[in-house]
Image (cartoon, rainbow, N blue to C red):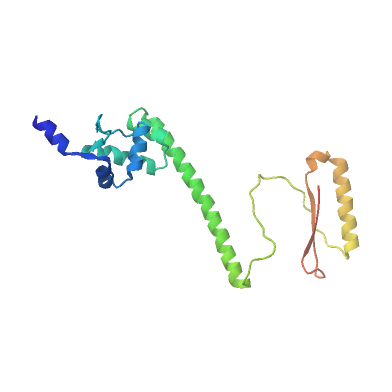
Length: 195
């Protein structure tokens, strides 16, 4: 009889237990609903849920696994020991790869933000034209660099090259044809793109 009373003394209603565990009562209710973390006792008359201090270890394990980014289904299987050590290693290795990819993406975003801040410091405003750099698979390309006396000669050679490539290569495999023209008489770079 003494054991029963001591067990009742160490049982807490959901509100009290949530304060001890420092988690919302709604989270405890949700974990109970999905069968992840069940109260030690549920009063049939009042519907009150009671938790034991001993359950803190299990709850902390659930929270730690959730903190690693595992899904609740994965956490449930881990808590119930339904997963082999190899599966655990696999899940954690996959999660590690996801986190590393997110870090890399965020690092690129950070560089872009830093670049914009530097631009604002230099110019006081954003440029009119935004450029977004994207990664594409490696592609073979033909490059020719030549100097010309004037624009007319330049455009004539570009046209000749385009016609020669179209005749010798299937149009579908040609891809884009682009020419970049730069000269001292230009304020910038003049480019031509043909599909």
